[in-house]
Length: 267
Ligand code: SF4
Ligand code: SF4
Image (tube, rainbow, N blue to C red; front, top):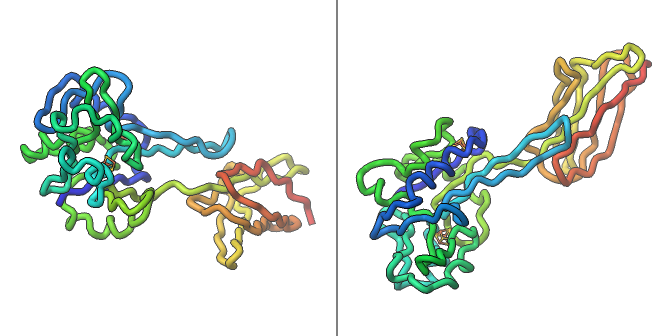
């Protein structure tokens, strides 16, 4: 059975996969799997972006979204005569049998199905089944230069699938698209010496969550500190630097946050 791996740490948001999907499917008839994707209004693979933080400490989270080729697919349950799962795991909406079934669009919890008004059919990613039949990769995977998108046999990705378990899974659909390294929140700030009007490099920053679990980092050559991939919640933050009074703050982190700057007072 085939599966997709999406490693979000490797995705740089180049949109190559989205373009490749359009290139492969707009204007191209790949029956019996798909009729052409329209030029506008549909994204069988859709890049999503979320901006985290505030200027100047900002990061953009990129996530390619597509049909998850679910093993327990709501679309198949809703239309068993016109939507089917291939032996290799790819889920296909039969363009002829599904004609007129506009209601199918609302069945997918991942918003992966689009309605084609001109052709009167529901449409979505087929996993480039026409290419897979020829032993080739889906075009989005082929186009991904960073290795963020991969496709292959489930057993070859067993460890990564286990690591991804539950990421971005909405219900009991059992998706065959597995996301690695989901973006969590970051906490950042800057530490400086107001008397010398200089940043402080090597200051020690510790955050402790409500369970007593601690993480530590140091300010870099710009006086900046960053905590990556941390969860929402309350933290006690401590800033220590040689020759300066310790600063302690209570933080309720709900979004990625740039705490701005911390002037340190000399002892
Ligand atoms: S082609 Fe690869 S790196 Fe580029 S946006 Fe898509 S998944 Fe990310
Ligand atoms: S993601 Fe949506 S369209 Fe794709 S198989 Fe699952 S329910 Fe069906």
